[in-house]
Length: 242
Image 1: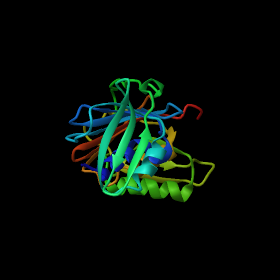
Image 2: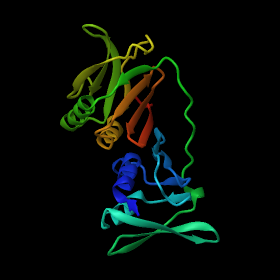
Image 3: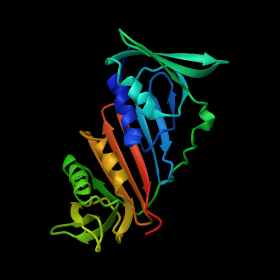
Image 4: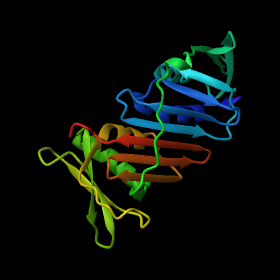
């Protein structure tokens, strides 16, 4: 039997409220992972659930929303079985003690390819906490702007990274956080990023054990979260039209 709550958490961390639908699940029998990219191609990432028993194989998920809704009608303990056609996985059969559902799998070839992200240098490092992520979500909801800007500033005792949701011609909210000593000494000058995507990242990665954010002056922001045996990573490219 499989704990559906682990699957729900796994899905939520890449689905991000509907931003990513098409992914390929990959299982080696001991862990389950999904690499993903959104349709706008400005966000890529990976979610891995380690020490998790799941049928071995590669499974194309064309509509994560549909799978999530179908799983929602089942109890917490479920059984996953794989139906194959010509040795290729074609369906999930998932059942609890009362119901069975059948979910059609897609050919992995129709799932978008996810590029590799090269390691960057001169990053600004920030250790995340629940206070910071909650503040971002509340600020985004209050202001409603789609863009936020990242910059560095001198704090009272050490350098800080500042988030400003909105801009000089709109309603805006600003707040800052301490920059880790291991960071580059470079400066960030109001780099624009998508506020909606970061809100969904924070919203679906609550109660993390460890969380990190890195921002590169060239316009790449990354997030990493750890939840026991589950890890999630995201790479967001700056807005190009601002």
